[in-house]
Image 1 (cartoon, one colour):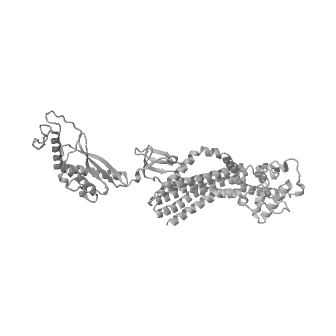
Image 2 (cartoon, rainbow, N blue to C red; image 1 turned 180 degrees about the horizontal axis):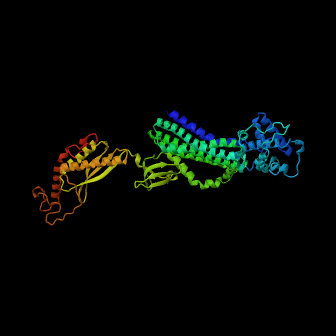
Image 3 (cartoon, helix red, strand yellow; image 1 turned 90 degrees about the vertical axis):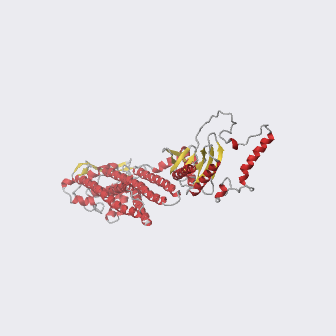
Length: 590
C-alpha cells in the first residue's frame, strides 16, 4: 500500500514538473541567433520562401527556419515559437496572393539598416538589420500583418507560385473557410469569431478546472483513505486548487494557438496563460510537498525514534525553498529577465551576502549539531540558559520552545553549539526530597513506626524506585522533629510524576493518622518555672538527678550509665549496612 501511495505522489510530481517545463521546452526550440542564412535581404527572402515550400511539402520542422526570419524581439520569450510560426504562415499567404517574387530584384547589398519590399495603405513588408548584422522582417511588418492578410482574403493564389498557400492548413484557416462574413469582420482588435472563441475557451477552462478537481479529489481520497494516515480535507483541498488551475492553464495554452490571433494579442494572452501555468505548477508543487510531508510525518509518529520527527519538517522547508526558487526562475524567464546576468550579479555580491548571512550560517550549523548530537527531541522538557519549557519545533534557523506559562520562545540554533542544555525530559528518575515535621512530644517508638511505615509505602508504590530510598529522623528543627523523605519516581513525564507524588503523600498522611502521629507547625512555648531547662513535663521519679555536691566525675558517670541503658538494645554486633532488598536493614533498631 505504501508503494502505491509513493507511485501516486511520484506521478503527481512528474505532472507538475512537466507543466513547469513545457513552456521552457518550447522556448528552447525557438530560433536563435545562429541558424539559416539571413545575411542580406535577398538571403532572408530566399531562406523564408524555401523553408515555407519545404513545410508545405511535409517538412514541418522547417517552419522554425522561416520563423527565424522575423524580428521577434518585441515578443515575450514564451510566445516567440508560436508567434513566429503563425507569422511565417500569414506572410506566405499574403505574398502568394500579391505577386510572384523575383529574388533577383531583391538586393544583396543595402545602404542603411532598412529596406522596404512593398508598401500600401494597409501596411508594409520591410526588413531591418539587427545588431548582429542579420536581416529580419521588421516589427512594422509584424504589426501590419492582420490588415495585410485581411486585404487579400478571398483572392486566388498567383499562378506559378511554388508551395502556395503558406503552411499546411491550420485550424483557424479551416474555420475561416466555413465562417459567415459577419463573424470575419474586425470590430475591435480581433475578428468577431475570435472574441466568441475566447469566451468559449474561458468557459471550457472553468469546466475543466471543476472536472479535474473532482477526478483528482476522488482518486486522492481513495488513496489517502487506503493509507489510513491522512484523511484531512484541508490537505486535499489545498492541493486540488492549484491542480485545477494548472489544468485550466494547459487547456488555454493548447487552444489559444489555433485561434490565429494577432501577434500582440497572442503575446499578451499567451504571457498571461503561461503565468497562470507557472503559478499553478509552483503552487501545486508547494502544496504537494505539504501533502507528502504530512504523510511521512504520520509515518514518523509511529516510530520510536524522534529523529524523523525533526527531519521531516526540515526537509519540507528545504524542498519548499527549492520549489519557490525554480518557480521564480521560470517566471523570470517568461518576463524576459536575463537569468544569467542575475546569477552573475549574485556571484559578484556573494561575499557581501555571505557576511550578511553569517548568523544564518551559524544557525544552520547549529541545526546540524542538534541532528547529530541530539541533545533533545521534540516534546522534551529542556532548560537552555534562562529558557525552560517543552521543545515544540526544530527548524533550520531556530528551535521553538513552549514555556510552562504558554508563551513561545524562539532560540537561535547557533546558541546551542556552546550552550549547556539541561534535558529534563531525559531523566529516568524524578527525585522527591522533603522533610516531614512531627511534633516534639511524639514518642520515639512512634517515630520508628512512622518511618518504617513510610518505607513500606515506598516499597509497594508502583512508580517508586525500589533500589534506593531514605526515610530517617534527620533533624531537630525549631518547631518540629524532621524526618527526611528521599525517594525517586520512575515516570515518563511530569504529569505522571505529580500524580504519583500526590498518591504517595496522601498515603503518608493516612499512615500518620493511623499511628496517631501529629504533624508539627511553627509554635513557641514560654516556660515560667524553676524547673531546670529541658526537665519540664518529665516524671521527676524517672529523671536522673546529678549529685548535690556537683562532682564532675559523678555527672559523667551518670551520663554514661543512661547512655548504656539506651544503647543496650543495639546488641554486641553493629547493625549491618543498608540493603534495599532487606527491609529489616533499614530499621533503626533491633
